[in-house]
Amino acid sequence: MILTSLFHKKAVRKPKVAALAANQNAASVTVQAPGAEEHIERTHAEIMVIVTALMLCMLLAALDQTIVSTALPRIASDLHGLSKYSWVATSYLLTSAVATPLYGKISDMFGRKKILQSAIIIFLVGSALCGVSQTMNQLIFFRGLQGIGAGGLMTLVLATVGDVVSPRQRGKYQGYFSAVFAIASVIGPLLGGLFTDHLSWRWVFYINLPIGIFALFAIAARLHLPVKRAQHKIDFIGSGLLTVSVVSLLLATVWGGVNYPWGSSQIIGLFATSIIGTILFVWCEHFAAEPIIPLELFKGSVFRISGILSFLVGMVMFGALIFLPEYQQLVRGDSATKSGLMLLPLVGGLMVASLSAGRLISKFGRYRIFPIIGTILLPISFWLFTHIAVDTSRLYLGIWMVVLGVGIGFVMPVLTLAVQNAVDRKYLGTATSIVTFFRSIGSSLGAAIFGAILTNRLAYHLDHTLPGHVGTSVAKNFTSGATSLSQLPTNTIHTVLVAFANSFHDVFLLAIPFAILAFITALFLRETPLKTSTKQMAEGEGLEIAH
Image (tube, rainbow, N blue to C red):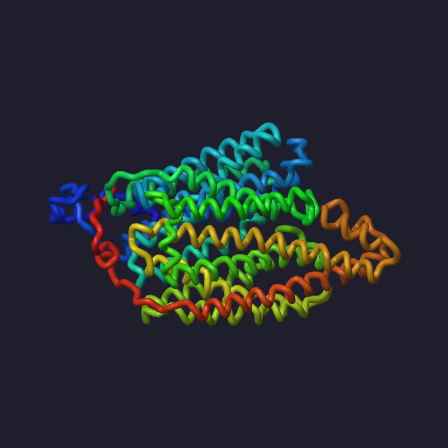
């Protein structure tokens, strides 16, 4: 019913005529177009039509992060580019991370709808070009283009929900997006394997086209958002410094311990460049007329605490989502598809928690308790995973995953809600993008930190169980992907499996302090009254409705 009504010919309700701005002496007066009003109160059915289209956008971004990973070995083989394997993922990561905060600011300047449509188009063009790539260099370049579009999808989707639904009712709708993200993490590897084995790896990119085109037309037909008309100045210097800082940081985390040692001049130089770039960026933003990241946002405790918490939770969450499938594949011998399906308990816990939290927030108008409960569950779940072994019962693993999923589900959607409720409407897109950006940076650092811990602990355990330098050699070959268990002597396999299990145990043990720090941070999150209508959201703003 929702899908069929997307393109129904029935016209959207015509808003009433709003009064013109009273201050005739102002330097610039915002004039509202005839037939516009400052706010639109939508029915649940109307909201669900918009939410369905936005969920398709979210599916595009979330699915692309997982579906390509399964097909990468075949892609590298067909395009004869095994040496450039990692750059297919790295180029996408870099461009999407850099684009995320820029989309938020630009959408606040020029309107959410047009910028979201532009992001979808860029993503679809990148997807189509990736599908027809004939060389690895082409694929890497087009993945970067695709990442530019993807950087806007998640941020603008969440910001658009903030435009359409009041904070008091927003929680129950945001739970749907958490569910989409969780489902994509499971079906992505499954679809990637099916397409690669039975059609072609090119379909992992082509699948985006029908979904994206449908979402694009649905948004064009049904989404009408308030826009403040004014002259703007784009902060090009700040954008450049932010790009340098983020790219340097991400390259350091991607290359560290893989392409170059962590203590090498290359990695240290990248970290130094990132720090210097960040300092210059902050200085530049202090004087910019319209900064990409307004520093005044950090004066608000809700925004500041939510950003830190998003970073910490992104760090530990991403580490778990990477290493649980890796444990399933390396230690339990599961296929990539099966290891993805084994995450269903985590996904189920996340979905139930996010949907339940959203509905309870809408009912009672309070959100602070949920991040606190969630961050209590995170260290508990990691403590449970420290008992992981070669033959750990799948039932126990499933229960532990449920605990972790519930913890994540109680935290991540609520942070976006808290920030959107706390900031002025003119900063809605910017604030949403910054929280998403902090989570992305935390995820990248978490993957690098815990990946380094796994490598070091694996070498340690193998050195103490295998004679001479055999352990170091095996650890190095495994972490570089050059060795499989089938290539090892039979009497060595069990020893390696035990070493792997112990290494995963150490990773989760060392993640506990970060999870506890997240809990302590959550205690400082302040409860602010949730706005109950879009009229309150638009209060004090001169807005037009963009059709």
